[in-house]
Every structure is written in structure tokens, then in C-alpha cells.
Amino acid sequence: MLMRKVPGFVPASPWGLRLPQKFLFLLFLSGLVTLCFGALFLLPNSSRLKRLFLAPRTQQPGVELVAEVAGRAQGREQESPRNPAPAAPARGEDDPGGQTGARRRKAKAKAKGWPRRTHPTRPREEATAARSGGIADPGPREGSGRFSFDFSAFRSRLHHPVLGTRVDESQEPQSLVRTQREKVKEMMQFAWQSYKRYAMGKNELRPLTKDGYEGNMFGGLSGATVIDSLDTLYLMELKEEFQEAKAWVEESFHLNVSGEASLFEVNIRYIGGLLSAFYLTGEEVFRVKAIKLGEKLLPAFNTPTGIPKGVVNFKSGSNRSWGWAMAGSSSILAEFGSLHLEFLHLSELSGNQVFAEKVKNIRKVLRKIDKPFGLYPNFLSPVSGNWMQHHVSIGGLGDSFYEYLIKSWLMSAKTDTEAKDMYYEALEAIETHLLNVSPGGLTYIAEWRGGILDHKMGHLACFSGGMISLGADDAKEEKRAYYRELAAQITKTCHESYTRSDTKLGPEAFWFNSGREAVATQLSESYYILRPEVVESYMYLWRQTHNPIYREWGWEVVMALEKYCRTEGGFSGIQDVYSSLPNHDNKQQTFFLAETLKYLYLLFSEDDMLSLEDWVFNTEAHPLPVNHSDSSTRAGGQ
Image (tube, rainbow, N blue to C red; front, top):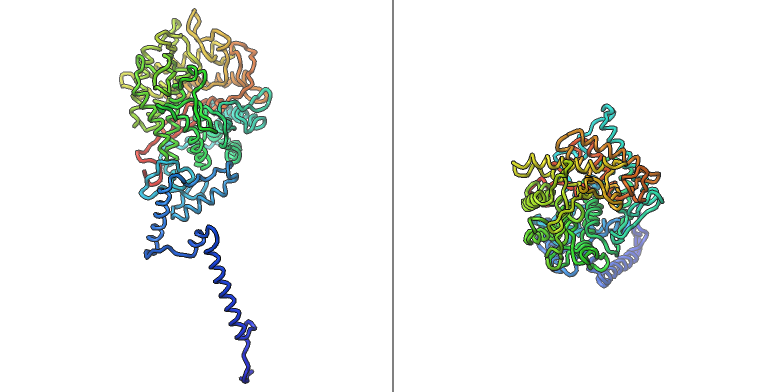
């Protein structure tokens, strides 16, 4: 239909508006937009909004523009050291569930153009790659987005699968050793389920009273049994139990505690357990919490010499020595000497070299100080750097210092020659001044008090058979066979301390005097608290020799634990190994799950499971990887 043009007629718009109305509407709309943009620039803290709309003043487009913006942001952070970016909260701490921290890290990574990291268990996590040039910042950078650990590259360098070469058990005959291994696995499952049922989240289980125990060594930290059990559960493929432990770490393991803690115990149990759990699984929660906890231990090193004191206050950051250690004036050799493995890995996983620097300084002090007859006394002043008493022991107070020397050499892929030299020098001094053979032909390492020998060994000293075996191959060629035999003889002596008891479990200490050999001489030394050192040596000697006697001896321990230490509510230590009806001490020690059961399981497993080519065990039996590459595993190839 033809629309005729009539004078004064204005056709309607498609919106049903005439032209004057359309003009007024557009005028109103433009005013509203202008008002909104004006308000945007007047709002408080509007700089973030300005960056959404205003391009940087640059003529360089594309990638060069992104690089320039990232460079300016990095420069601002370097210029403001007094106000560093806060670490993203770990899940289960300030941000339960971890979502806020994850969003912040993701936003930072995206803004700076950082690459996405591929992760075998958390593919959605953003990478926190190293800064330009691939050089990691030595300062604390956990959660700040400046550092990345290439877990896939690390795993590719292992010589053997973590869990060893797997076989189809349905096709494998039910051999004796498989039956023995499965029995140890069942014991671990029972110990864990008992803990979970009666004491989950507490530090230790009390199996007789069926409740939990906190203790006062950990400064308010909880869940010591959980952390100590992580790698054992993983190793034994107790998958459901491992997931329970991991979930507890994610949701309930809080670090905002304020008590006094043992530097040594927190390091070997908590940090060692978290580090090994990360290296076995790649789960980021373990790495994050290990580093944060390591930072909380650093105030212990605030001394004139840099030798740490034994106790650190998590609230005040103060430190002190144990009151019983020379009237509170000394640090303990085994404590400050058993930090090296974990602290090097804290630096490796964080990019913060302060951890490595702290333990390297300990080495420096020990190398410089005079040592009586080449021996290392157990007490050292962290103020003066002088020995406080000439008591030498390869058992309690001294033990793991020597262990960490040879293991530092091995963990460095045999490049830490300082550790190697210190170890063999110390071992030769021990041979000269402490090593003895009893009238009955038992080889033992006595304790030395200013030249006078106590002819006894502690259960803790029984780790030394395994240690000497572990280091035999790298000794001087003419001494290698001697050290292998020495390791076997010491381990035999420790086995004798077991067989000479009614329970076939060894006492806390045993003597060689008055015609009595390898037995405790008083009730106060007759207890057994589920200690691992003897079976630890069995495991190392088995791997070095494949002599079936070590598996036979290990099975004897399994049977004795089942008969005398297993209770309805878990495993318990006993108060007298010389009584066939022993009283229980009502404590399932964390190290029973971390060490005793793990070493027994490995004893009945193939050698490529946690192969000694790839791993060293800290003194709590937590596996830490050997550095197989001269180049670090840090991002950027550093």
C-alpha cells in the first residue's frame, strides 16, 4: 500500500518513537554514559578500574607491550621490599578450601604472562615460573608466584619407578616373601585405622585408653601421626587411607600455632613427611605447607654462631636450648646436625636459599672447631661455638649427625665432597676410640666420656650397621670390604640384643660388662618403644648383600610385634622386654608407622621399590630424592 506524503506528517520509527522523541532519548542516554564514566574516575581506589579502560602510554604493540607492563610491575615489587606480596594462604589455613588463594595466584599468573604448569595431579593449577632469565629470587617466595618446581622433569630423572617394577599379582605365585610383605601391610592398616578411630588429628594414639595424645614437642602442631604416615600409606598402596590422610592435611593441618617446638622433631617428622609426600605424589599442598613450616623454624638460628638452639617459640620467634642440655647452655649434635637433608630440599622447592645457607653455616662451624681425637662431642655452645662436654655417642645425642653426613654425599649424587670427607674422618675416629669386640665376640660401639668408655650401646646406635653398609662402597678401596664386614658384625650384635630377651624385642640400651653381653642391666633400660633402628639395618644389609638371614631376622620382629605389642586398640610399646607378660606403655609412636613398618615392608620388597639409587631416607625414614642432574629442577633450568 502506497503511503502518501501529507504535509506535517512525521513517520514513526521502528521503535514506535517519532524523531523528536528519538533525539531526546539519545540525548538522555549519552548523558547517562558520561555520568557513569565520570563517576568511575572519582571512586576511591579506582586505579584498578582505570586499567580496564585506559591503555598504557606506549607505542609498542602486542607482545612488547605485555613485556613492558610486566617489567614495570616486577620493578615496583623489587623497589618495595618492606611491603612484599603476601603468600597465598594454604588450604586449611587462612583460606579454608583454598579458593581465594588459588584465584589470586591465577590472576597474578595471567596478568604477568606466565605459562601454565602441567601437573600430574592438579592440571588446573597455574604455574609460578621463575623471573625473566630463569633465576630464582633467593628471598621467601612461597605463594608469591615467582618460583616453580618442575615435578615432571624430576620424575623423569628417576632411574626406577617409585613403587618398583609392578607385576600382576594375580599371575604371581603366593610366595613366602609376598605373604610376609602383605602381613606388614595389614599391620600398617590396623595401626592407621586404630589411630583414625580413636585419635584422628591428635599427635599420637594411646591404644589402651583408646584416645589421643598431644605432647609438648611440636609447639601446638597436631596430626604428627598423619604426617609421619603419609609416605608409608602411599608406598603400601593403601589408597583410601592415603586419601584420608591427605584430606586431613588439606583441611585441618593448621600452622597458626603459638607454642614452643623442638626444631629437630618438627624437622624430621613434619617437614620430612611433607617433603617426601610431595616428591612421591606431586600434590602441591604438601610442598606449600613444608615451606611455610620451614620458615617458622628459622628463628632457631638467631644465635651468634648460627648454630641453632633446640627450641623455637612459634608465637614470639624466640629460641632457647633445652634446660637439661648443660643447664640450658648447649645445642645437641644430633639435633643441629640432622637438618641438612630437609633444608636443602626446602631451598630446592622454594627458591629461597636461606634454608641451604643456614645448614651450610653449621658445616662451616664444625669444620673450623677443634675436635678431640677427631671425635664430635654431643654438646656445643651456640653462643661461643665451643664444645661444652666431651661426651661422644653414636647413639642418642649424636646418632643422626653421622647419618646425615654420608646421606648428604649420596643425596648430592656424590658431589658434596665436604660431607664425604667429614663422614669418613669421623668414622675412622670412631673405629680408633669407640669400637670394641666383647669376650664373646660381639662387635659394638661404646660411648666415650673424656677418654673413659661406657661399654654399652643404645638401641638408637643400632642404625649404624645400616649406615656403615650404605657408605662402604665409597670408602677407600682397601677399606670397603672391611666396612661391609663391620656393618654385618654390628647388625649381628643388635640382633643378639633381641634374641637374648624373652620377647625377642630389644631393650633401650644393652651392656658388655661383668660377664653379661648385649643385655640391659637395669629395669630403666629394659623397655621397647616400637623403635625401628634394628630393622633399619636389616633392610640396608639385605639390599647390600641379599643374605636371606636379614629377612629371617625381620620376620622374627614381625612375629614379636604381633605377639607382644599388638593390642585391641593399636600397637603399644612394652616396659620390660625380659618379661613374657609385659606391661604396655599405652603409646603408639608416630615413628612406628613412619619407620618400623616401612623398613619391614621394604625388607620384604624388591630392591627397585624406593631404590637407593634414587632416594635417601631421612632419620625418620622419609624418602628424599637424589639430585641426579647437575642442573637444578627449578624452572628456567637453573
